[in-house]
Image 1 (cartoon, helix red, strand yellow):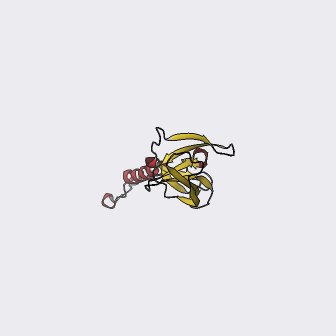
Image 2 (cartoon, one colour; image 1 turned 60 degrees about the vertical axis):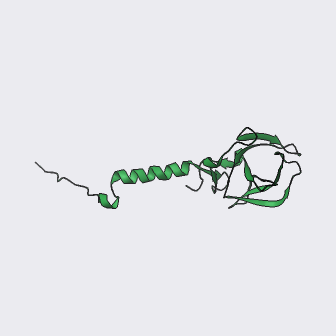
Image 3 (cartoon, helix red, strand yellow; image 1 turned 135 degrees about the horizontal axis):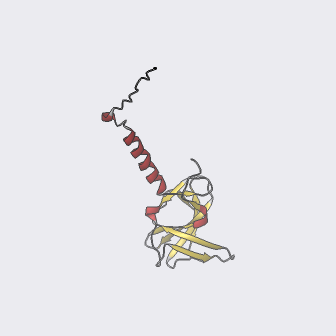
Length: 139
C-alpha cells in the first residue's frame, strides 16, 4: 500500500501571513473600493458615497437646461477627482445663491457635472448620475 505523505502549511502569524489575514485585507480593500464613485467613461475615482449630501431637501435632483437637455444629478460635499472648468456664472443656476462652472473628470476631462459655489465660499458638486459608476473600469 502506498503511503501519501502529509503536507503541512506554515504561516507566520506574527508577520500577518495567515489565510484569515489575507481574506480580511481583501475584504477591507473591497469595502473601500465599494465606497468609491468613479467616472463612467475612464474609471477614475471622483468621490465617495460618504460625500453625498442633501441640498434643498434631496440628494438627487432632475433639471432641464436652457437647451432642453434633462440631467439627473447627485449632490456631493467633496469630489477631489473633479476639476472646475470655465468661468463661474450665476446664469441659469439650478441652485439659488450659487454660481456654477463645469465639472470635468480629473483624468479624461469628460463633463461629469457642475461645481457650485456660494457667495460665502461654500462649495458642492452636482454630478450627473449617468456619468457615474460604482465600479472602476480599470479592474
